[in-house]
Image 1 (tube, rainbow, N blue to C red):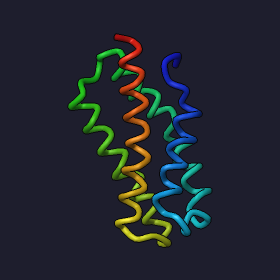
Image 2 (image 1 turned 90 degrees about the vertical axis):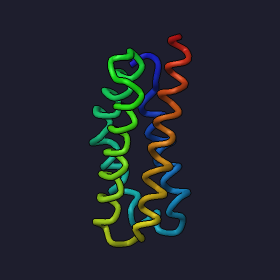
Image 3 (image 1 turned 180 degrees about the vertical axis):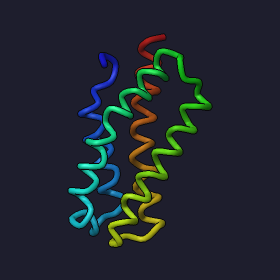
Image 4 (image 1 turned 45 degrees about the horizontal axis):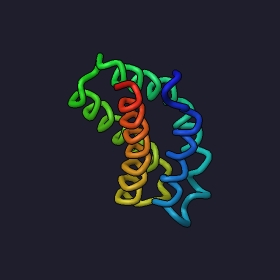
Length: 109
């Protein structure tokens, strides 16, 4: 995708997660890297559909909520961080993605 560098966005998403879970990062780092790598194609598709206008803002936000819940569940399955930490980390990561897509939309318009 030309308008978003997904590798950069994923790196930023991991950094946001890291800052949200602080001293627990060592325990979840590898799993979260694998999780985002596995979800990369999904994020690329969501970005492409939103930027092209094929996906409304409402549906985009609904899909992002789904992604947050999946990320939270993945982190909680590791049983090293609390639900609140998992929610904060998932929210931080998805916020980074949402901002990147929003910025890409502005460059298209």
